[in-house]
Length: 169
Image: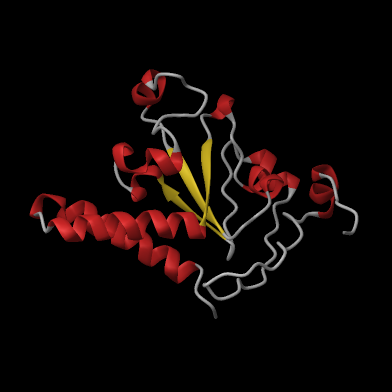
């Protein structure tokens, strides 16, 4: 294996990370992309979101209510808040980054967690997100209950957005 660049070196070069190694998957291979996460961009925005072909941003509730999505995403409130009271009082947001196997250091640069700025991101691979959505869509479909129609539609929309984002060109 060749030498690894440090996070500082990656920032100095102005790139998010080297491309991930190829892995066997049922999905088509990801498109090559290079997203510039420059130090100026990342440091000027208190809660930056540097999306690209390899990462898409969603709100926490796009994956269902906390009772459905906590196993995948953790609690609905900020990860540094043990009870959620401050989160609820401020009308906080937890962002979910669905990514195509990006390295943790690249995710931390492009989608940081910054407590001082109430900036919280959760990182989920495409495969984990799709499995979660497909399982819950199937469960809700099987119930045939009209009271779940809005939730089912929201999960289908999230599924379609991820499919479109990570489809082969």
